[in-house]
Length: 251
View (cartoon, rainbow, N blue to C red):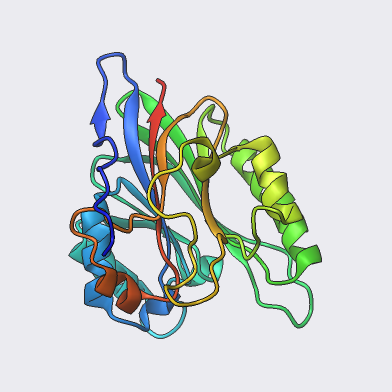
C-alpha cells in the first residue's frame, strides 16, 4: 500500500508580491494512453504550470493539446508540434508576458528536439520557464543542456525553472551540467517518490524540475501517494511518472 503524502504548499501570492507556484513536469507520450487517467493525475496535483514533453505533434495536434488543457482547467501557452514535443500549460493565475518556441540543432539521423519557453508573472513575481525533452545521444544531449541554460538566461528574468525529460540520470554529465548551474528540486527538498520511470520498469530518475538559485524549493518529487493521485492512474496515464514541485519566488 502506498503511504499517503502530505500535500505541498498551496499556490498563493504573498503581500510582498512573492508567490508560491506549483510546477508539474510530465511526459504524456503524445496522449496515446488513458487521457482520462492523465487528466485526473494533473488535476490532483493542482499545478500552476505544466511543462509537457511528448505533446501531440501530428494530425490535429493543437486541438488535442487544447482539449487536454481544457479538461484540467489550464490553458495551452506554447509548444507542441512547433517544438517537436515540449509544451507549456498554465492556470489562469499566470499572466503570460512572453512565449517562444525553439527548435534545437539536430544531428543527422536523430530526432528533432526543441524547447517551449515562457515568461510568466504571478502577482509581483516573474518566472522564466523552459520545458525540454533532451536527446538519447550523449554528445547531442550535452550540447542541448548548454543551450537550455543559454535560453533560460536569455529570458531575462531573475527567477526561472527548467523542467523535463532529460534522458539522463543524476550521475550523467548533462544532468550534472544543469545541477551545477541550477537547483535540482529533488536533491534540495525531496518529497514523494524519486524515480520517474514507469512503475514496474527499471527504476531511474530521468525527469526533473530545476530552479535558479534565488528560488526557494519547498518540495519536489513524484506525487505518488498524494491525495487524489491513484496508482492505477499513474500506470495508465503514460510511460513516465510526473514530477511536482512547489517553489517560492520572490517579487
